[in-house]
Length: 401
Image (cartoon, rainbow, N blue to C red; front, side, top):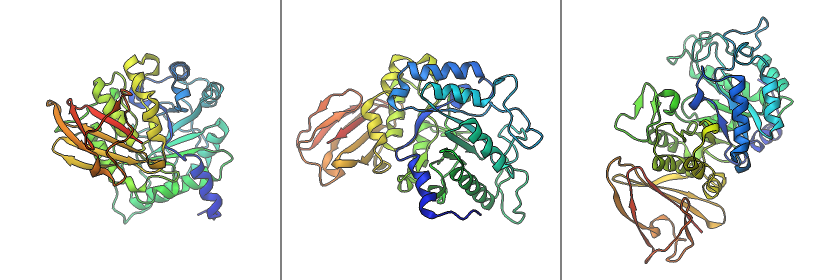
């Protein structure tokens, strides 16, 4: 294990993500089979042209599918010769020329999730050097499969990993990245929260994958909350809420990429989905096709007040009340400001709800500057109560100053 000054070791990591990272990832829309050099360049252009970069979405991350199905003779990663003939440095250079930061998906075991033997296990130094040489700014290290776990006596997961080897492997990645010649944001994707994450990475998945276009469509909420390990929006929010207290100071819980756009959610569900990610201080990593954004989707993901709530680093917002199908989430922000999200999780019924502001903090007085984040309207409260009528899967997202 490398011996590093605790001060310097921590400063580099935390400075890379003082607020939740924002960007775009290819997986939810394109998956592994549909990406190629041409459409990734087109998506880079679209992120700039659609105003996403200006709004703060500055990381462009190519997920699984960019690699060849084997490693090179010296254990090095190879770009897919047909889909990415110019290689990944050329694509990184193109992203940088447009003002974006660039990232890639990689795997720390022996195989990727599809079974190709392209993992970085015992080849970490080689792969990190490649990422530095290519000019990466972000690396997503996705647990996937392991066939060479040295912990013989340990209980192992269905993917062949023991918890001991998971931790040791990710710590090794953390040390190599922090001591590399480049600032590379470290994203762990290992499907649930572990208490050592905040010390060693900038963001980490707290759940399994969200349902999206590539998995036959996103689902907001249903009785069948899981489908072969894929989760609804509300199921993911439940899991992410469990580790809320760990977020902040350069580390953020990652409830997976956003499934906005034409991926299965209606307009109100997309608004609720985005609002949940914002109030949970989640990394805002869009997973759409940025070349085909509707005006409705842009009105959601470019909403300045929602993004400001997300980017306030004070805390991860939490669910503070559940009353039948009504859920209330709260995030306390700088300068005494608060965000409240009132959500109807019922898929069929409109709900009437009287929001009593006094329940959510002693600082709430009868008269406050209360703004509806999505409509921009200022709301009045009678005696500290706001009367709401909330449609199925709709939310009311409030900023209270």
